[in-house]
Length: 70
Image 1: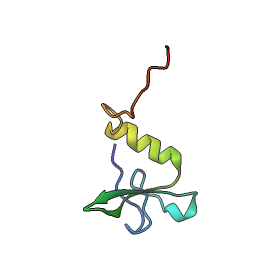
Image 2: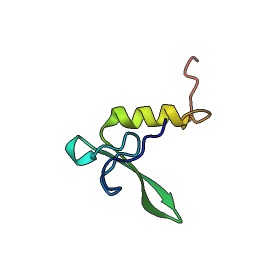
Image 3: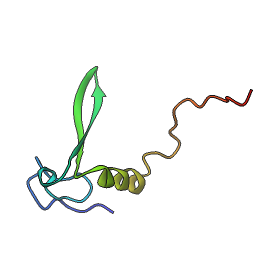
């Protein structure tokens, strides 16, 4: 569910549209051509987690899993 921003885009949460500066914000960056660029801002980890789940961003993604059963 995408909610349109309620505040200017500079401070709007990528997930809920609230002003992130009124909360404990989390900022996400991505690497483009070797440079880090802003890729999202969230009120807190709750909004970030909800965004990841809603958009299916973790599906099919995993870090290396070691079998330590031996």
